[in-house]
Length: 111
Image (cartoon, rainbow, N blue to C red; front, side, top):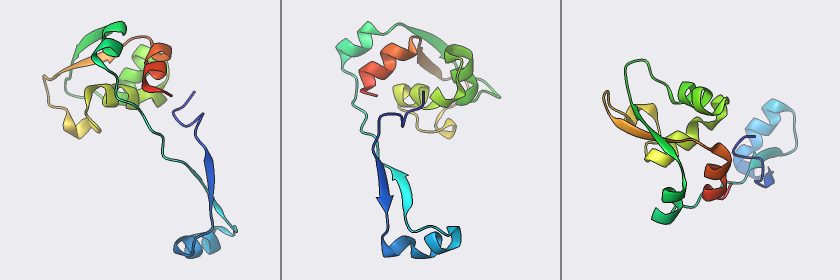
């Protein structure tokens, strides 16, 4: 289950993408609508069981997602939960929180 499962698929035939459509040999380009994630409240966060993790050399969000969720595609959950959009935003020795129950987390996020 990825983060786009419930999002609308849009078709885009705008002139902006004309050269791309021509290059691909298609009449329209299919795109996902931008998902709208809600910010969990303090109460929402209190209901989620988390674990502490110290960011160290060689760590990758996708590796943590695989370790804790069994699926690398959920790297964005850890990033979003900690307010760190990319690994470049994390510093060695930084404490991050990993929510443990992916189903509950996705429900809290509205996904």
